[in-house]
Structures are given as C-alpha cells and as structure tokens.
Length: 381
Image (cartoon, rainbow, N blue to C red; front, side, top):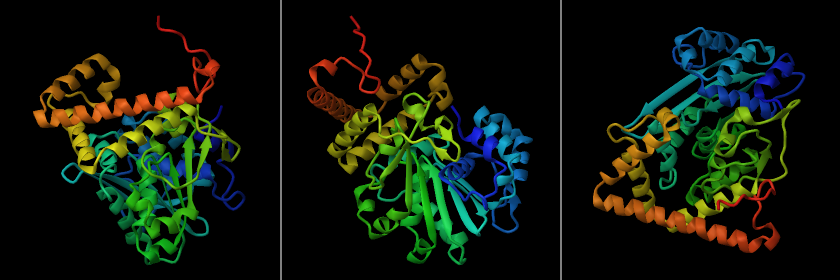
C-alpha cells in the first residue's frame, strides 16, 4: 500500500514537463494549505519563496512540534523532490475570527506553463472552524466561501495566466465556491477545480448559472467510504478512490492509495456510506433553516461551555467528554433544549427509516451480513 508520501519518493524527480500535473500532484499541493507557513511564506506573490525552502524552514521551526508525523514526512519528501522543490509560492493568507465565525487559509504556487495553483485549507480543528462547516447547512454563503472568491480576485483577476483551485474537506468546498462566487471574468481564467472529499452546497447555490458553468471543470474525489464529501447537495460526478482508513478516518488523504501517478480507483461508494448519506439527507430535509441554525448553535454552545474538553481531549477520554457534554446540554435554556431534542428525535427517525428501507431492499439471506464486507453480523445476545 502506498500514499502521497510514497508518491513523492517514487516520482519526485520527474519534472512537470515530462509528466504534467495530475490528481495526485493536486492532492499534495492541496494538503500543503494545512502547513504552518505564517511568517515563512510571503503574504504576496512577489517576491515568492521556493517550496523546498519553505518546507525546510517549517521543519526547523517550533511549529513543526505541533505537526503529526504524516505531515512532517510530507514536508521532508517535498524538500527532496525536484518536481515540487523549485515551485515558487506566495500569497499565504490565514484568518480565524470567532466573532464572524470565519476560519480561512490559502496559499498559491506557480506551476510551469505558467499556471497558478491556489490551495484552500479545510477545517483546522478549531471550534470556529467546525462551526463554519455546520453553518453551511443553513447559510447561502459563509464568510469563508466569500473570502475564497475574494482571494482569487485579488491575486489573479488582473493577470492572464490560467488558474487551478483546489482544497481538501471544507477547502474543497472553498475551491468550488471561489469559482462560483467570483466575477465572470475571473471564472473564465479558471482551468480546473479539485475538491477532495469536500462537502456540497445548499440548493440555492447548485441552481446558480455560475455553479452550472463551472461544473465541467470540477474534479471531485471521494474515498470509498466517504462521509464529509456526501453532505449537502452536489451535482459533481465523483471519482471514488481506495482508502486504508476506517469509517470517518477515510477523510484523511494520507490513507488514500496511490499507484504510479494516480489515485487507485474504486468502482463505487461503500453501501454504509450510502446509507449514512440517505439518513442525513432525509434528516436535513425535515429541518427548516431556523431549526438547522438552532441545532448548530446549541451544539456550539455546548462545545464552548466552561470546563468543556478540547477537541484533542475528546478522543483521549470519551467518558469524561460525554459527561461534560451532558452537563453543558442540561444547562441550556429550556427552549434551546427542546429544539435540540426535537432535532435529535428527527435524526433518530431518519436513521430508523433508512435501516427499515435497507432491510426491505436486501434479500432475506443477506439481512444478517455487513453491507460492506458481506460477513455475518455477530449477535449481541
């Protein structure tokens, strides 16, 4: 099994002139948007910094201590890969504004051609970052989506070079948003858009002429067990790829498998992901915008309550985290508690409806088997 780090070690010496930009390259550059480039990569395009120099500076900075091993391995491989090392990069931008519920970051690279490649960061793990994700369920346009379009306009609207926009997770949504909400003049310069397991949009957006105009240039890549990339409405036919991750961890691009210069394709989405998508879609369609907003605000109030655990703590001590969440939930105002309970009841009903439909669809002999593996489901009795 191989991932994007292995790809850099295998083919990092192959110049773009010999093997043009591919989907794996685009995933690598999109992943770089998560790196702590503040104070290292210039905030403008001129003068730029070479990617190998920026990678080396991050690795030798205190910020490296906060990076997981997979990201450190990626930076080390990039610093030694001529294919990427000489790429000029700049226009690094990062903002986090809790008051306006905004979390945004982007960085750009100049590819041979020349072609500009704008990479948008996904959710960074902060609460405000997750809050903006959830806001997409009831807001027509979020501050981050508008910031993405403004980013393209600021740096590339006056130029003549074509532009590629890309991002993973919320960054993929931002990449598509940048192409939808920018001016017609800017949209004409967009060569391609990559969204890697990025969520979709509200129906108002998918009905826009600008959205329909950019669709032929959008490449959507989802892991075979995608969850995030199935949220909300999406008219982009996806490419499914093999992942070694389990459940929601398939969202991690480092679990996506690579073969030569391509992501290993998977013929279809896992049935478990289809069922979860069906459940969430039914649930959201039952909720008005006001109910969606109330639900999101309640979750955020719980998550930001005093003595609430950090996102890291949630995975370290599940029992303590659950107790803290329950304590915060019962402290909500009665009206907010009722709204939250109503939404959760509708979610449970949607899950029950989906499960009943699946059991009716499947032959009797298959009803006690896992929909993904085909193996027998052990009885809890």
